[in-house]
Length: 138
Figure 1 (cartoon, rainbow, N blue to C red):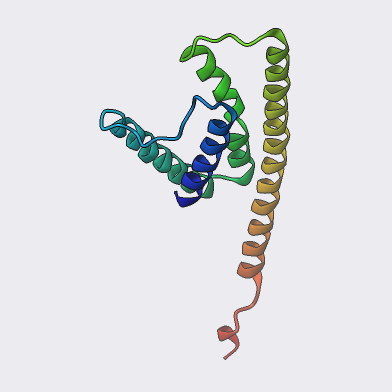
Figure 2 (tube, rainbow, N blue to C red; figure 1 turned 45 degrees about the vertical axis):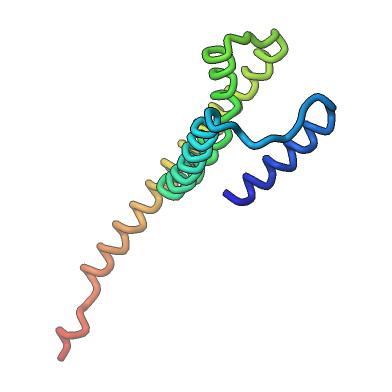
């Protein structure tokens, strides 16, 4: 939270210095609930995303984190009603296809790895069942 606030302040100062008519100011009492709401929901979203990343496999979490550009375009079109130019759609196609390619190749690798682990686990359990017990010889 402190880092985000500090970066926001620095970026705000840089943006304000570019245009002399813009000045840094404290939000008015009418604007303060909206600013606090954005801060609280942003902090909660980051916490939940970081927690969620710990609960899923690395491939899936990296895909979720790298798909933010896709969601940014969706928000740009749906919320802000701004339609990107054709070159942007070309880039979106490349980003989405690369995410899909990574997902498909990693799911095959994950399936093979899980099958290998299951076979190793099965082999070990068979060996332990067939091994003579140490207490049986006493």
